[in-house]
Length: 188
Ligand SMILES: [Zn+2]
Figure 1 (cartoon, rainbow, N blue to C red):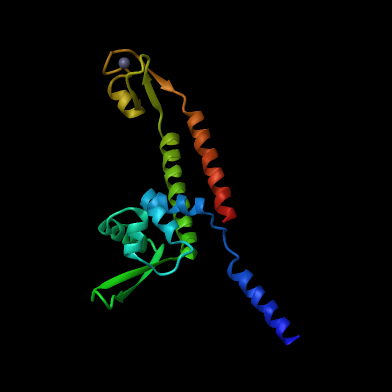
Figure 2 (figure 1 turned 45 degrees about the vertical axis):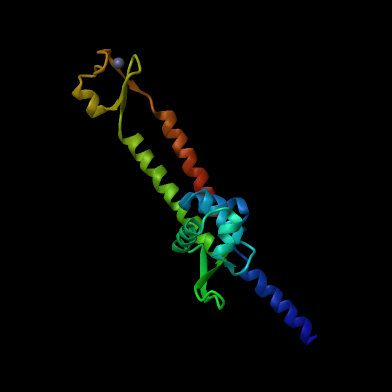
């Protein structure tokens, strides 16, 4: 009976710890790739599920020279995606670093990415909503109201009249993107 209770407690503890966003490889690749590029995200995925992988092994398995591998690994480290131990190689007498991925930290990076995307969308929305845009009838130029007024609403390229552009569809599109992102953020 005592033993069974321990098992149940353990199990409960296990689920509460794991009660976070499920991280698929696709999601990890999206998040790490967003900040550090595709090659770095491939390195992160390579380290996932392995333990204490040496920098030389990473370089060899990823088909890159040791300097490139180190640069990518320390970039990942700067973003809290990986950690490392440094150990002295007894035979060669030099130090080698051994790397592990910190999967739990991807969640923070994911939130940071979503926040950045949101800020960008809101910036674009502000710009679209706060400006009137004008475009030459021959489509050579597009500019905001102030600039168009400077040119008396005549195209500086061809002299044709510049027309007011309806950007309500663009605004609608950005609103939809913001809503989608808000829903995604609420889920995680
Ligand atoms: Zn023109």
